Image (cartoon, rainbow, N blue to C red):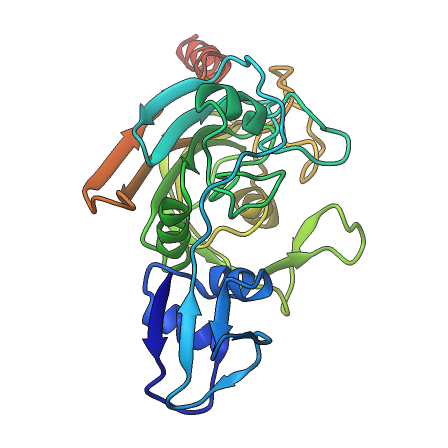
Length: 303
């Protein structure tokens, strides 16, 4: 438990906590307030409470707790692991956490087996340790926190855009530009609530891409995202007329390679270790099916 004496006036409790504790995002502060882990003058307060000069705030970061999810022996490549974080190369087709329709057989079930149940509890009962996500059919690097302190710090790094995420994507058609930035807000589609769409009233979404290789009817791209909106790369590429090959949601999904699911791979991550502060750079090779498609394209080009 930590105690602080407020030195300002009329600031929302969650905002004040997030400002005082730089490793704590405002979202995390709100969760701690709601769960009674932040008290003002010994009493629970609403998130919207305006702190007053002289208030005594008690903050408790709860210990990581055992999560009620069954560990499962699912083959997942571990790229890096220490006592605070684990970085895995998620295969295509694996859902990140349990949800309706996917009660088990998820990445979380696999991680529970690898980590023997020791994961951050901040994500809740069904998302322990999950700092960020990848779509079911997107492969590549994912960070999982083993304790709450690591989770809080990594969440803040992501929020502050300090985590560099690089993806590889094969898209339909030949892009006009060698490099470009797509800055289009994304929100929930009004036509289909399961889909996202470019909307004027959506949240800011920024995607950068550059061409790695051009083929007759396809382009291989390196993609960097500044923001992490749901389906961001898939929505943005479809919006400019170059949907990701195999995407069954944002294009007709048809492709001459018979690929099920989008050809999108989270190749590399750069971030500061949440506890030691060491600069980390990790990479994951393209999955075999992705390499095979590129080899086919190369073969077609050379004939």
